[in-house]
Amino acid sequence: MDKFKPVPMKKKFFTPTVIVLSGLALNGLVFLLARFIWGIGAVTNLDNQHPWGIWIGLDVAAGVALAAGGFTTAAIGHIMHKDQYHSIIRPALLTALLGYTFVASSVMIDLGRYYYIWHPLIMWNGSSVLFEVGICVMIYLTVLYIEFLPVVTERFIGRVNLPGFVKRFNNPVDKILRILDRGLDKTMFIFIIAGVVLSCLHQSSLGTLMVIAGPKMHPLWQTPILPLLFLISAISVGLPMVIFESLITSRSFGLKPEMDILSDLGSMIGPLLGIYLAFKIGDVMIRKTFVYLMEFNTASIMFTIELLFGVIIPLRMFLSRQVLKSPVGLLIASFLVIFGVFINRMNNFLIAYTPPYEVHSYFPSVGEISVTVGFIALEILLFRLMVMIFPIVSVQQVSKPRTKYFVRGSAK
Image (cartoon, rainbow, N blue to C red; front, side, top):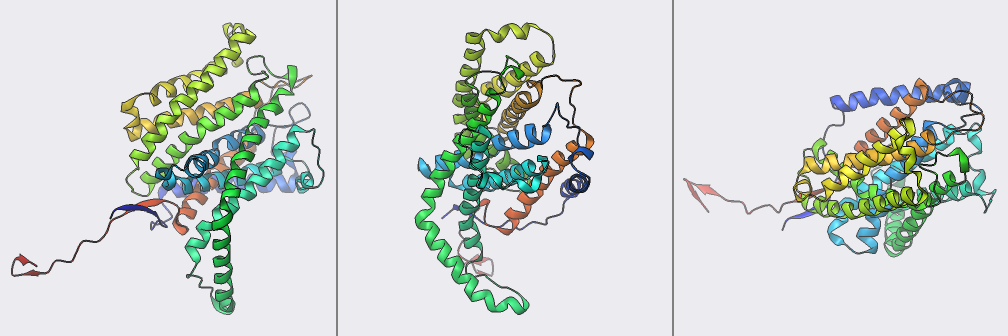
């Protein structure tokens, strides 16, 4: 009987695209090394007026949103018990795990005293929004690694083969893996629920972080419902990110895309984008900030691009049956939603935010751009490596037909 089963991908790792990505990752790591040797000021254009740049605005704020596929698919597949979506949960989990790992790394490299990143664990401040974001991200990252452990146990139980003098630990390690597997099988629902709750908390609190910026924010984005908008946009981009990753992975490994599942996911995105658009337009109309769209400047242009290409056009596409049945159509529509959330976070953290007493405008340095691009390339490379080691991507298992014996032109 045909069925989908997660298996390690049996493909060669190095391809022309992988070589290019490796070069970009290496370039970013060189600038990252320079940041730790000579300090953050030697690599970035940050100063007292601009204490944060693209490492926070894009790597962290956008990275957290684009990693939302982990908790959205967990909610759909496990909490809502939609078993038909189980084949996409593991790739989404891996994307979220890598995404949050690099988000935490970006926070650390952006801190002047990066070696104090552990301080929130013991120096609590319950009235700080930034503390709430930090502690939720730390705990959720831990939850993601715990959720990934069953994939590790499935891969290595009964296959532990340590070489050389550590061979004696094969049986103890196998026993530990079996104990973990049994324990997690009974308690995983706790971590899944915790992951969804923690994600909702810090996704919305990133919006709260910009609300308290007050008049430093441009009126087009400064709104009391910004936490709600951040949460809805994160949920809305979670499924497009899963579709985009699934289609790219299928293309990369020569697999047939699971169009039935992806089309069903795509049908959910239109209503989510519609809800977000309703809140966005309603907010602009109620606060009467639409008057700023009459001005021809960077803020009005970026707001229009964000809304038109990131929400309205993909909303129309996801409501089309032809798009839902087309891999190319789903890929384009999903990319537009991802692009829209990316632009939205950049607008909120960089375009809309104007520091007091600003002397000059901020533009990221070559080093900042290199590290950001390098992190994205490295994340893609690690994703490819992980799906080749662990059973993450589901492929269709076809039962072998009975062997036929041919004798003198007749089959028996």
